[in-house]
Amino acid sequence: MKKFFILAALFLTAAIPALGASVSDTVVDAGTGDASIDASYQIASFSITITPRGSGLVEATANVIGTHPLMTRIGFPTIAIFERNNSNDQWRVVRTVSSQWNPNSLAGSHSYVLSYQGVAGRQYRAEAQFFARDSQGSDTRAANSPFITAT
Image 1 (cartoon, rainbow, N blue to C red):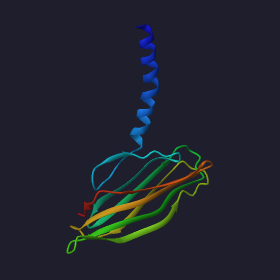
Image 2 (image 1 turned 135 degrees about the horizontal axis):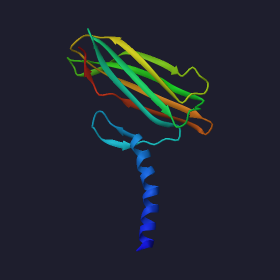
Image 3 (image 1 turned 60 degrees about the horizontal axis):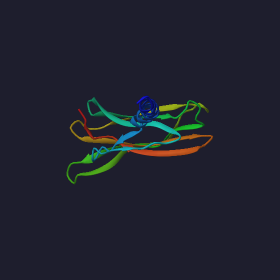
Image 4 (image 1 turned 90 degrees about the vertical axis):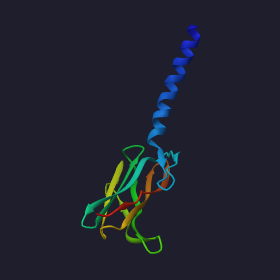
């Protein structure tokens, strides 16, 4: 019985940190709501959100965090804001920015806010690519925000 408790304690000691690490690497697909584990050696977490600010203004906020504080490059190859065309239900790019990197040569994270003066009542969503590089290699991820209605 004592051997069982020792084995159980060893298992829990190994399993709990592993479960905790996978929670921060869970990605939810905005279109389907499906979650998937998206672990990386360089990217610990990433997100893209879009927020209505009033009078038609929308802001997309992208965040990326590396797996350690000394990434040799971290940022966003592209960030885009899309607007839905109500007549044909198609999305079109209305604002984009490229090559937004943390200016520090060694940094562990980066954030960027992209604004667009849209039209109140129209729907918008954001999309971003996330990049991180360290001495072991590099990784790129992409994500979409859910859509919002500008106010």
